[in-house]
Image (tube, rainbow, N blue to C red):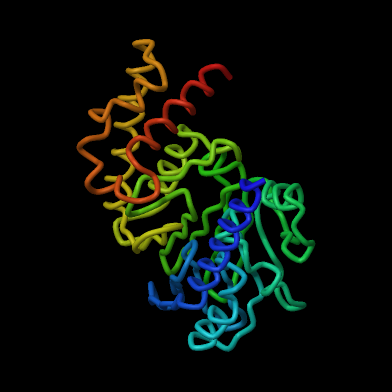
Amino acid sequence: MKKPLFSFLALLLALISFAQDMKDTQIETIQVSDHVYMLTGRGGNIGIYKGAEYTLMIDDQFAPLSSKIKAAISKITDTPIRFLVNTHMHGDHTGGNANFNITETTLVAHANVRKSLKSQGKEAEKFPELTFSDDITLYEGDETIMIFHVHKAHTDGDAMIYFVNDNVLHMGDTYFSQGYPYIDLKSGGSVNGYIAAHEKALMLINDDTKIIPGHGQLSSKADLQQYTAMLKDLRTRVQTSIDQSKTLEQVQADTKIDEKYNARFGQGWITGEKIRATFYNSLKLEKRE
């Protein structure tokens, strides 16, 4: 009889803590280029493109932050938000969809994002209204905005957005600049797909490109190259352990696999033990497939 009460109290305390966090969260605006801005708060980094005719928004964090986010955007531009692009379906990137989904705004995402949100029983106002399979290109004045899918990376519905003239790439959660990545295997993500997404990005950009990660600080091509090299090294090390018939438990316990990266990347939510398990499970699954 005590366990349900304890669970309820724990949930209640978590909700109170979350609400307080939302109340205390401040939205910071960082100008990335002439027309592109990055907004940080709680959740995924937001991208804002300030055009002459319209504003394009990338992701929207959590619903309780929407009024603060709108206030921050109003200080950048007074043009209407014509397109809101979701980089994937996780709630810290799509939580505010319904609050921004007004008549003049169209929600855009990969088809799997709409499918995932519908399967979760979300309200219709949160569903993308314009979807694509591989890519879609938008034009605003002289700017070309490329939105393209990367397959089985962070999830099965990831999109990157590249502003050609401003030379800015928003990578969503296919890039965590200050920590090990969260690769959502249950939602179609994979280690090989994640690395392939990085390789695709590196082929597209140049040394002057500014990169907005899903989480973390604004980055450069050199930063992404170093991060990609780290991921490839971890993949090689974990694959070697798999080839030696080591178990998941043995790999989780083997701190030598990532010891040279942990001080920089393993201090957050995804620890060294978690990233070793993710790489092991993903590589084993992909081998079976």
